[in-house]
Amino acid sequence: MPPRFVLRDVSEKNREGKRTARERLAEERAKQKTVEKRRRALIVGASVVCVLGLAAVIGIVAANAGKDDTESSGPVIVPSGANGEDSLAIPAGKTGAKSTLTVWEDFRCPACKSFEDAYRSTIHELTDAGQLKVEYHLATLIDGNMGGSGSLKAANAAACAQDAGKFTAYHDTLYENQPAETDDAFAEDAKLIDLAKKVDGLDTPAFRSCVEDGTHNSWVVKSNEAFQKGGFSGTPSVLLNGKNIYQDQTMTPAKLKQLVQENAKG
Image 1: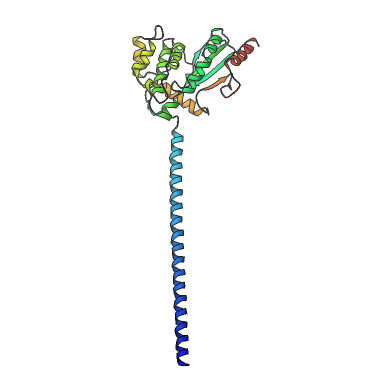
Image 2 (image 1 turned 180 degrees about the vertical axis):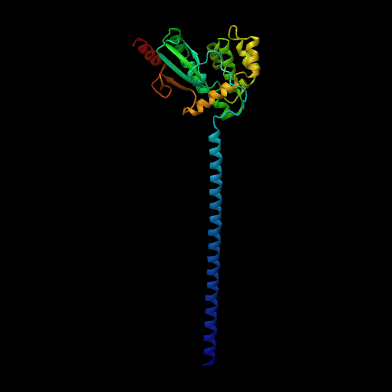
């Protein structure tokens, strides 16, 4: 009997020892799970903070998109003949035309060049016929998005050309010689002055001084501010008698001509 008692006692102690080991193992695993949960929570929390931080950065970038980095604190000098609200529109065509085409453009904007290349001859035909007048508004969207100052300086040069009565010809020349969007070539005064040689009578000391001095820079900045406040989706924004036709997927130069001529008859 005593040996059996001893064996049974030892066996019970062994089972107790195993149970205690299992409990310790279970406790250790539970602790590891708790640590792992905390670690994952920290990772998720950090990720959320990173995402929120990135979102904040993106928000700031988006908020600054389209803003002109070039500050201009000088007086606002309006180009000769500019009209409209705050004298921010450069007119082309006869004032008595029944149809008005309002164009918001950026000289660095590739989409603006595409529009001009497609519609230029039709617009000239209609303005020459006295059926259409155009109001050009200049923006500096690409400067704000890509950096640089080519949009601003090209717009100033175009305003200088307006002073000389050569806006339309120089406007067309700038688009016909537009550099790649990432190439800020229009930021160079020499480039803008060299292009003026393509327009008869524009390359004068007065024009050169106007370009080099940035005479109309503050006016361009004010025009760009009006663009930002106007709720436009981008450049170009083209309105015929107040209706946005650039968003019309069916619009063509032929259709524009038809609409203008029908309005002229009516």
